[in-house]
Image (cartoon, rainbow, N blue to C red; front, side, top):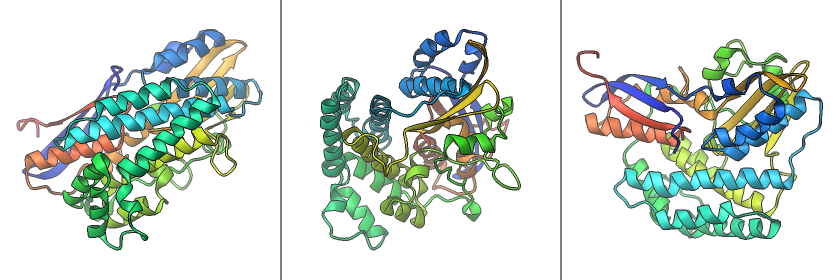
Length: 377
């Protein structure tokens, strides 16, 4: 989905048992090219620097600049519309194109192209309302129809799988993931979920200063005795949704992430139809971060996106961008926690499971999963 870097995931296996894993993140540090430039130039550059989530990146940059200048920057209907359209496009890419191919089915290219085009063309309230309705229909009729046929939630895992089978292509993916078995690392050791925070909470966590350089590549939440590497994304936002919570309770964390994307898609559809609803979290937030500095946070499809910068007059003196991928694939993060400590039927099954795990964490760059050479293992 992006040509900017790659995640090279290398694992060592003993038959179908996953022993170790490491992630080589070659994603370039785009923020470095912004330092030393006039702020107006930076605001023009940011949306086109990123092949994914360009609108969210641009809004985050603008909000961080406003916070650094002590200016108010509340979300507008246009901002929320841009973020929701973009997030819906990204969710649809995974749900309609990437996941079907993992289980030998054809990607839904025509359906995706139609929806992607409609979302790209949204430029007023009426168009947003209409496409939001189309997305809700897609979820109800083609993704979750099996759950709407029953007057109650599934009483057990077998009923859950039966309901997913009525849900079209995404339902089939969920059923396949569940029937592949419960894949839980030893001791049920998983990364805690990073629930949404306000920009002021982020500023307090960072101690009121710009993040350290190492935070950009290996972020962690400093809220207790020691830093905690968390998981961000749709699962973190939707973990309390009843059906997502049920899958987590059954121990099917990968399927829970896919289901959470469906729920998240519904939320963005609702935002398009009813913008700036008082019972939904603002699409972005910003706060000052010391003298001449500001921070902005945006909840993108993949998770929280942070921009933090410092200005010297109209020149950007320092800039930090922390993308969701940095959280989910950090040392000790969600991928690393779940990549080892279980056993599959054999080598191919283990590699497939690791591929599903990486895809469920929705990296913003391409990724590969390879087995470590025997002589290096």
